[in-house]
Length: 237
Image 1 (tube, rainbow, N blue to C red):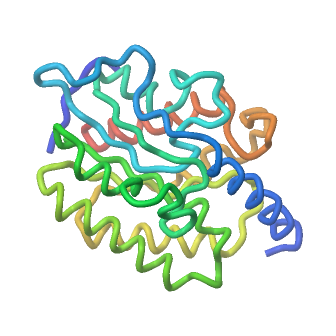
Image 2: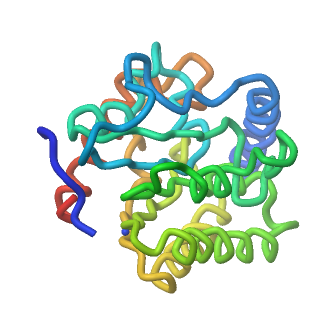
Image 3: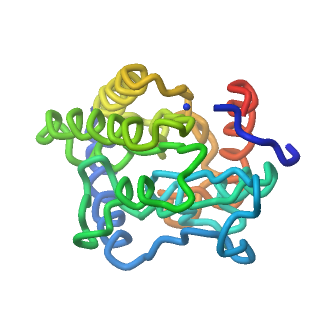
């Protein structure tokens, strides 16, 4: 993986786990700031350096990693010579905790207004919206459509890649598959490339989880980076 340019994409047990996780994720969203760039990255991209924006939650922010350099987004950006813009926020969903920071803190807004405009946008959202299902199902589906449509319309020259929402336990509430279906359909509607299977990348490996049992540890993020790298190779990126 050397520097490359971008070519212009329930059970009761589960219910109990969701309640516990919701409390943890809301608390994290309230107190953990995004790390938009890894330590050591220049303030602006060098001439010709691809700019890549990441739209995600704690799994893309890198919560649980020992340092930002160990999160999957920074691993692949560094290996590929990309300039990383990663405003991802803990606890964020297409609906969940949206607008938590107030006006001007919406991630889609930050991405479409980034200068220089991103060459590639990687979307990894949807995990936290499970905690608002089924009560806000209609809102979630509409928000998925709205976010992806806005990214496509306002960044027409960017390659848009939408990743199947991550999940963190081997047991899966019905909502996981429903949200995955909405995300995949919305990606197809806007002509984005889609990476399937990400919700199972950590399945069966508790040793890849941090002490909170919610987020990946360094080994877990390394595995996500390995799988993501293979998928990006498949897409020619």
